[in-house]
Structures are given as C-alpha cells and as structure tokens.
Amino acid sequence: MTLLVVAELKTESPLLMVKKTRWVSVGAAALEIVLTVLLIYYSTRNIQKCENSYPKTGSWKEDKDCCTWDGVVCDNSTRHVIALDLSCSWLYGSIPSNSTLFLLRHLRSLNLAGNDFHSIISPEFGNFQSLTHLNLSHSRFYGEIPYEISQLSSLVSLDLSYNSDPRGPSSYFRSQLTLSIETPVWKRVIGNLTQLRELFLDATDMSSITPNSLMNLSSSLTTLSLGECHLQGTFEINVFRLPCLQTLDLGYNSNLEGSLPKSIGSLKFLEYLNLRSCNFTGAIPTSIGNLTQIIKLDLSENSFSGLLPLSIFDLPNLSVLYLDNNQLVGPLPNHVSGLNLLIDLSLSLNFLNGTLPSWLFSLTSLVTLDLGYNRFIGEIGEFKYNNSLDYLDLSYNMLQGSIPSSISRLVNLSYLSLSSNNLQGSVPSSISRLVNLTYLSLSSNNLQGSIPSSISRLVNLTTLYLSSNNLSIMLDLEMTPFIAKLVGFVAFEIIVSALLSIKCPVTCKVLFWLVVALKNRGKHTLDCLSGIISLLVVLELEFVMIYALVNLLHSCQGVDFKIKLLTIGGKRLKLTIRDTGIIQSY
Image 1: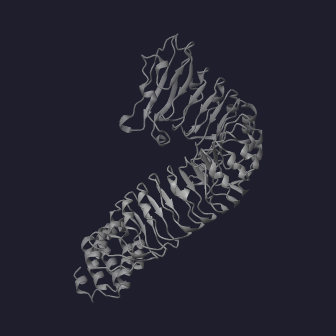
Image 2: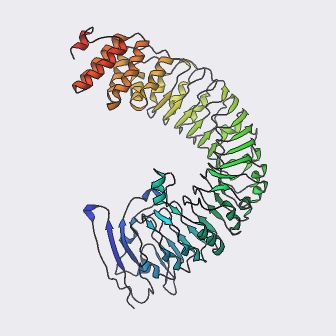
Image 3: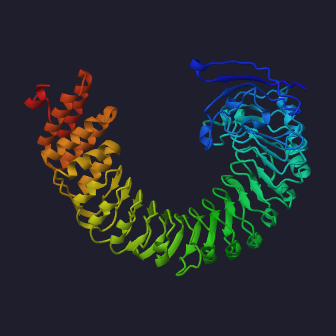
C-alpha cells in the first residue's frame, strides 16, 4: 500500500523561501499515515512560549519509517499513528478542512501548541473520535470554537488556552482575533465530554457564559483553568466542592464575584488555586489551612477582608503565597510549623499590623518577600542563612530601629526597598556587598550621617532613592562617577532631588561628571538641563553652570540646539549672553 505525504513548507525569511512538494512511499506497515502540512510556514512568533523550539518536520526523511519521525508515535502492533506532537515546531498558516491530517482516525493525542496558525479552528477536528488529548494552545487560533469539538466524547484533556491576548491594543482588534466559546457549545462540552479531567480555556472569551453553568462540570475534573476569560457574575460555589480538583485558575476575571466557602478545606488534592484580580469578598476561612497539598495560593487583588488566617502559615508544601492588595487585618503568627518550601511571600497593600516575627528572616528558600504598605511596627530582624532572597520590600510601614547589618548576607538581592518607615542610624557600609542590587530605596526615614563611599561599588545599580533623610555625601573621585552613571540611567530629577535633600557639597569636578552624563542623555538633554540648573541655583553655583554650559555647547551640534540651550540656561540663571563673555564665544 502506497500512501501520500504532501508537504508545502516555507520559511518566513525571503532569503530562504522554499516551496517543495514531496511524494513519499511509506509502505503498507504504516497504515493510514497521511500527513499534510499545507501552507504552513516556519515561524518564530510563538517560540517564547516554548522551552524547546525547533522545526520538527524539518527532520522528516522520506526514506525513513514514518513511525521514527520526530513527533510521531505509532501503535507497536498495528503501526497506526496514535500520537502526533508538532508543538513548538515553527509552523505558520492555516490548516484547511481538506487537510489529510484529518484522516489520521486512530489518533489518541494531538499537540499543535506553540505555533502560529492564525486561523479558525477547523470543524474537522471533531472527527478524531479516538482522541483523548487535544492541545491547540498558544497558536493564535481565533473565531468561535466549533460545535464539533464537543463531539470528542473520549477527551480526557482539552487545552485551547492563550490563543488570544485579552489585554491587546484595542477592543476592536481583540474582537477580531479572539477565540471565543458560545453558550450552545459550552453546554455541549460540559454535557458530552464526561471523561474530561483537564480543561484549559485561559484567554478564551467566555463573556456570554453564565458562571452558574459551571455547577454541571464533571466531578472527576482535576484541572479547571479559566483565567482571563471575561467571566462575569457570581461564581458558582459548587466548583469548590469538586472532590478531585488539583488546579483551579480563575485569575484576571475582574467582574467575577464570589466568596470562599468553609468547605474549601475539603479539597484535599488541591495544589494550585489562583483567584488573582477577581472581585471576591468576605473572609478567608481558616479551613484553608486544611489544604495540605497546596503549592501555590494566589488570592491577591481582591477585596478579602477580616483577620489573616494564621492556619495558612502551617501548610507544609506551600511555595508561593500571594495575598497582596486586599483588606486583611491582624498580625503574623509568632511561630510557624510549615513554610519550609516557601519561595514567594507577598502580603503587601493590606492593613496587617504587629511586629515582624523572627521566622520571617530564617526561611532558607525564600526568594521574594513583600510586606510593603502595611502597619507593621518594631525592628527589622537579623537575617539568617538566607542567600536566596532576590526581592525585599518592607516600605511604607512604621518600622523602627536601624538597618540590620545582616542584610549584607543577602548577596543575591536585586531589589531592596525600606523607604517610608522610621528607621534610624546610618546607612551600613556593608550594604556595598549587595553587588547584584539594581534598585535601592532608603528614602523618607530618619537616617543620619554620611552615605558610605563604598556604595559606589554597587555597579549594577540603576535606581537609587535616598531623599528625605538627614544624610550627607562627599562626592570624591570614587563617588562622582557613580552618581554620574546613575544620571545616565534614571530620571535626572531623581538625582537632583537626592543631591538637594542630602545637602551635597558640589564642586566643579562633580559638575563636570554630571555634565558628561547629561551629554549622554541624547534627546533628553534639554529636559535634564532644567534640573541641573535648578540644583546650581539653589546651591548658588551659577558660575559652575557657565562651565557646564560651555561643556554642553562644545559637545552639541546645530545652531538651533545651541540657541535653545543658551535660552534655557540664561533664563534660569537670570543671565544674558551679552553678560557672559565666555558663553558669548559660542
């Protein structure tokens, strides 16, 4: 038996444009293997969705048994093709309804995720009656999900997620390129696909679906992922009673209302719960502490209120806990028995109070700690053993005492914000050991003394806030280039504000470095010039501004630009070109 494989492959590169049709004899052993990839181009558009991306069909050889082709799996006895995995294969273009792909009647698993088909989903997908796993995610399918998909009664896993960008540039553009599911299809899916265990529809438009229809979902469901689906109305509480549920993701459905029932603690298999940016209210029940298998819990950006349930801090497998942007009150527990695996902890933007317990500073796996914008008091504890912490935000609280010297142990820290507290003492020189810092904010405290010159060793720093303290600085040959570098990266007004607030003694040499940095600002030079002149006027260093203007004029090109430069400088300094011979020469 001779079967036909027709492949028309193109690359997106005009230098590599190829169109090739192949007649391939694959022999009688590979029954019903008729693969057609029509008008499909190699594309890298969705490569970012894939950990391992390459054109699998590029390695297919016509002189090889098709069962040995990359992505093809055959039954050992019948040699029927039972699985086809062309995920992340750089495929681009539509799959027409007459494609011989749809003749693979024995397929049990089909994975086309991570490609760029940019077309509707063909109704012919409904003809794979033996299919148990179908994955068409991240492939830019649009239009309505065809009714025929609901005929795949053997499906165990259906993934049509992230074919749309729900936060795209405009509502009209989104409406043209959105994948949606309408009520008749949805009712048929939940009524006919009784074997379904996993359902992924993230970023699919479900705005026409009423949440109470979710109560008809199969009790055998283990995964329900409906993030960013435009769900609206009151969420059906019965979903929290599905006994086998392991993953529930409803994140970013901002018009979805609801509350957490006490019965949520009975979901003994639940590992992942995401309700981020919904509109849930009420208290978080203490029974949530019974979710002993939970790994990630995200209830952030809702309106949960009441006491922070302390039982949540005894969950043994928890690695990610996001409760930020709610209205929770109360203290943190003094002791915990779990959290040994905790990686991310975010409790910011609540009304939490009390002191920071010592266990917070002893979590060996912690990478992110965000407690900003609360009402915590007392001192910051001493950090122990933690070299994994990358992000630390304790800003906008009422913390007192000094900056702990042990903070220098956090050598992997890239973000540190202790701003807007009541911290006292000096900036520890050991902070210079945090060589990976890119962001440092100590502003709006009661810090005193001189900023250590060793801070200049923070070579990766791009943002520095030190204003509204009682600090001074000596801009020596070590510090001046450091400040000048920051000018090149951050808003110039930040540096001006910082220099003014810390009573900086400026010299001509310092201004030279600032001007050098200012010249590197390109088209923003004029905007930044206003800031540097303000600094000089306040410090009564008009003569230095003349020096700065000379340097700028010497480096810039174009008469019009020089005139604007002189006009801004002269106006702010109350000088005229005629009054200043040194400028007049330009």
